[in-house]
Image 1 (spheres, rainbow, N blue to C red):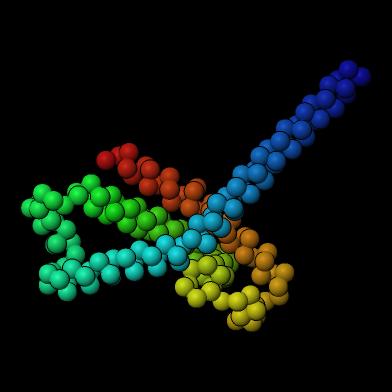
Image 2 (spheres, helix red, strand yellow):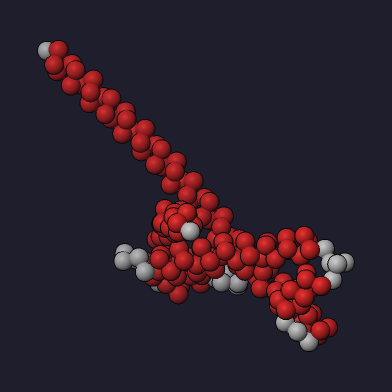
Length: 182
């Protein structure tokens, strides 16, 4: 009799622990989803801003000096004492940081596209929803992919979550490992 009560208590504890794990995983997946979605929403804007800034700076350097941007920056930093070196370095570091973030996302997107179960479909959904400069409308995506609205939203959520898992679970830890080896 005591043994049956103990088994019931153990089962109850196991179920409670399982519930806690599930709640934690649901919260974790929810966090991954929302953080990844925020990154995707910013992706095309950051890409546009970064490439536009570099092209403007490159054109200005070529027109005024007949040289490439990085040649001019190197000369200015080394030669001209009036140049605010900290400001230039800060702007270049900001561009480099943005570029690094975009490269991480791009690596995760490549892995997503190669994912064996619906990877290309997930990639296409994310691409049309977030990555292209001129986003597709919901109707255009539904029509081009020949899917129902409910399937689209279900697959879009799966795609964003899977991309987040790939990004934070594989790509970023791999980068951290490779940097600690150096």
